[in-house]
Amino acid sequence: MAQLHMVRRVLTESIAAMAFPVLLISVFLAPVSAPVVAEADRSRARWCGVGTMPLRPAALSRAQWAARRVRSRSLWRTDLPVLISAVILSALSLIVSFFGFIGAAALLFSPVFWLFDVAAQVGPFTPKSVRESLLAMPAGVALGVVTAGVLTGVSLIRDFALRAFSGSRNPDLLAKLEELRSSRASLTAAFEFERQRIERDLHDGAQQELVALVMRLGMLEAAATPGTAAADPDRIVRLARQAQEHAERALERLRETVREIHPRELSDLGLIVAVRELAARSALRVELTGTGDDTHLSPPTATAVYFTVSEALTNIAKHAGADSARIELRCAEAGVRVSVRDDGAGGARFDAGSGLAGLRERMRSVGGDLEILSPVGGGTEVVATAPSHPAW
Image (cartoon, rainbow, N blue to C red; front, side, top):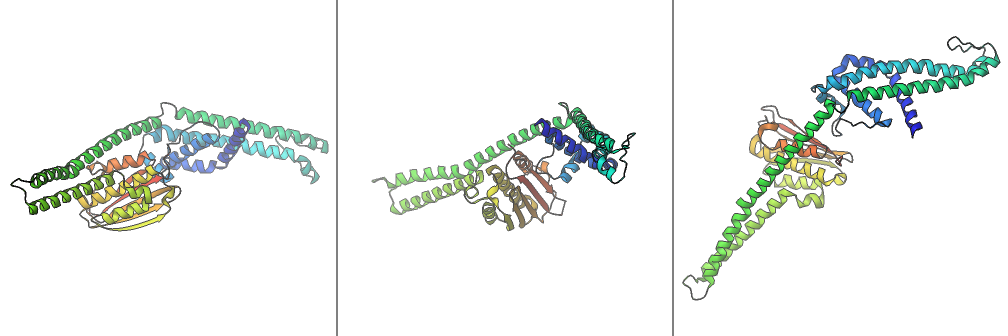
């Protein structure tokens, strides 16, 4: 394993040496390039056996990640120093690789060059006979080994620099910890809101119908008791029908509440069919485009996406002033992306109290994210993305 890591270090330093011109140019684009280079260096360190944590969420592309990091203070405290150290060490690797490996190759193939009457000069050494050319071969092997060792040392220095700027007090890790704390608090608030909603739905829906049912059954019992003044066959039939209607409405309210907790079609038929059923029940005119295979999605991911679509349609009906919506759902083995658009009033925000903040935290809990594009007067687009399986 140690030999494999050494080979990987030499290989990555050789790649870094070849990438030096690109890294040098990236210095002039530092606000954008620094997060990308820093994340690539973390990936390099993990590949070489160093325990580093990736900071880019799997659901975000490098472009999206860089755009977010530009607005973060960690860009200047972590990413920029990593970029500067990467440029300096890549320049050192370029010098070592160029002179070390080329010199080693020249010494190793010195007898071949001698056959073509070419003197393979390496520094002050120039073979002047066949014997000296043959003696140069082990020297070339030794120079190659030394060069590999120096590159390994440069790689270790690169690891040290990365750890120095990404230590236990690294603001990146502290920011990520704070984000997790904030997400936990938001999820707790969202779960409490959902519990209160279920309690309210049961109280205002099924419970009211059951209370009315109990009253009708009591009246029915009184009307059906022989020898009482209330014994009236027509009244008994009317009370029985009313009781049946209340029972049916209570059952329907319970079904609606259970469906909002977790729809059965989501577990039985998959995300695309569940969203199609959701669109069919909506008061809006919904155009749905669902593509891909949703069998790869984990239940937490499918549930998060389903309720994101449900809440988005509810917000359109309540706040957008639109009578139609368009849903684009794309499922793949790697993940899922859903977009819900309307042509309403726009102006939706996470802090507007419409439940979008809770949905964003729900998506983040499965490793995804939620974005809103909602210019005032220009309609609203809610976009949710998530990997097929959460990292946990």
